[in-house]
Image 1 (cartoon, rainbow, N blue to C red):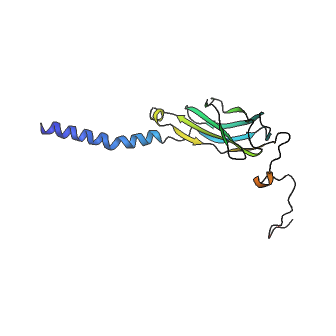
Image 2: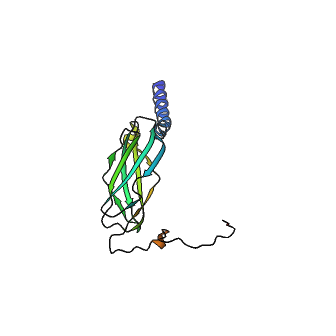
Length: 166
């Protein structure tokens, strides 16, 4: 009887101690995408028109990816788009309509991808955040933005930088 109790306690102790290590190993798999590049095809877009970007990457693993996409306008308003399944191609085109109410000025296309590469990640997906792509939202006719406050100058600025020479 003592041997059975010892074996049971040993087995339970082993499972309790190894489960977190196995769980973390499965959860902490490397990102299935490397060498990610974003090329903005429409650097200037008016509200209501399509923003386009070409995404290129090297896929290193057979994983399912759900893409959460958003555009953040010059005033900081985030517009979320329907999640999409990451295509299996290494290069694909993104087309999103810029909201009609988007503030003119510098805007960002931001992407978060939830990867599922194994059974544990079906419950706790691995999340990667892509570097934001920058583009400019043009003002609508009759709308005058204050681009100088956003760092986008309408005319060259005559600034003197200490220690700089031409």
